Amino acid sequence: MSSRTTRRPGSLAGPRGVVAFRGVVARVAAVGTTALLLAVAGCGNAVEVETGDLSAEDRERCAALVADLPDELFGQERRDVEPEDAPAAAWGDPAAVLVCGVDQPAEYDQFSSCTEIGGTGWFMPDTQLRERGGAVEITAMSHSPRVQLAVPPELRGEGADSALAQLGPLVDEHLVETLPCH
Image (cartoon, rainbow, N blue to C red; front, side, top):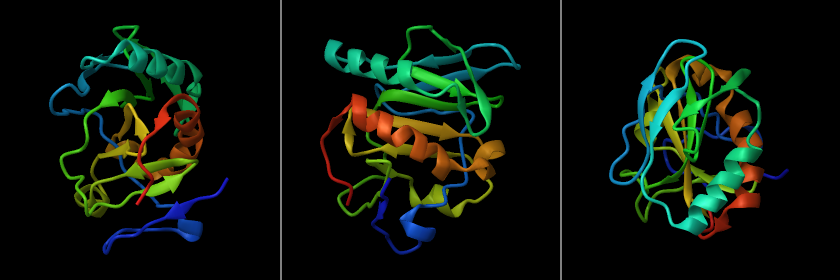
């Protein structure tokens, strides 16, 4: 697996271009038709997510991606999501949550850069990259529909770069590449 990094000033790139993302979000509030993580209840309970409208084709692609996602991520077991047919997956408590079919992040613009890991271009806002103790939202910008991984602060140190290396090939396999990572 090859990794290519395009750095912006202030970004943190590790050896061989792998960004050392060390953060996640337990509660995600995205704008528009993106996902909204409503509640993360105690261990064993489903993680409630709300998703926006997807075309039938995008819903099918997202469903195939979610079906192939690993049973373990960040060393945490996969949890159920509610509704069951949501294009989403969750791991751990507090949960790292992946949602397929999200909007472009507000901080992403024509000057933003991303890091290619596992065949997928990932973007993390500079503000979250600098805030080492907070949650982080990492979005696959190179494929459609977009996928976002929200990682809570408790899992930041558990290897988000390794998680992206696991997820990237699956995103590349099931979704349509639309933009090169720049």
